[in-house]
Length: 244
Image 1 (cartoon, helix red, strand yellow):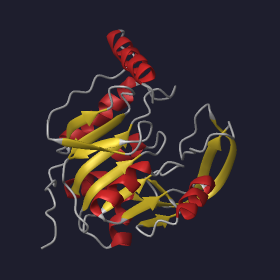
Image 2 (cartoon, one colour):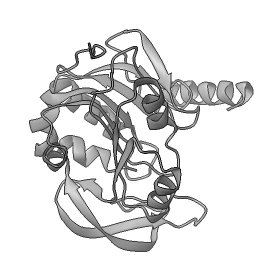
Image 3 (tube, helix red, strand yellow):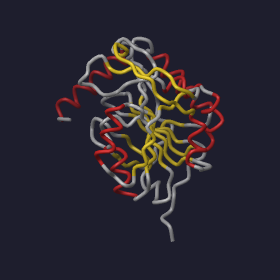
Image 4 (cartoon, one colour):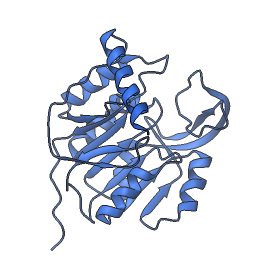
């Protein structure tokens, strides 16, 4: 992203917050951070917080794995990716990164086989379990697992870093009983909120952040240029030390 474009996007966010159409989420924690990914598909996480044994789950891969690939490069850990989008599956398979374990399924509030809405613009990649105006002229059937099933699939007790970029479904997932049960076993949570979708709005994101705070998460970072990518630190967070 060019400097001029980024500056313009920051000003746009501030203007929209000033007139009350963008959420204003406050950072409750100020840890030292490091950024992973490119300017269009990246998040900050807590500095030096992972190691090769860390459990990292990336839900919603699309055609941009820069975030996960950066984490793999720095820490040498495996990333468990979940995405049923055909183009995303092809993209990840072409990368052939032996530290990415791909599960070509969606993650939702109920398991089963469900409609998955593809973008109307065929040059775009991101589909969703949630219908919206720019989605749904084309749809396919995909397999979906619940969030709680991920712990069982991976045979883990905690997830050190969980990323949710699931095109509007994040709101229902954060509200789900599964998320509430597992919240205490998530160290860091990266979320992209889709409050700019017509069916959502800033209230949906403010409510979701309120739920996260009730579950013990605290906002530690957000993107100034998009106001959509956020980092939350959970009560389960403990920096991982390098193995002896």
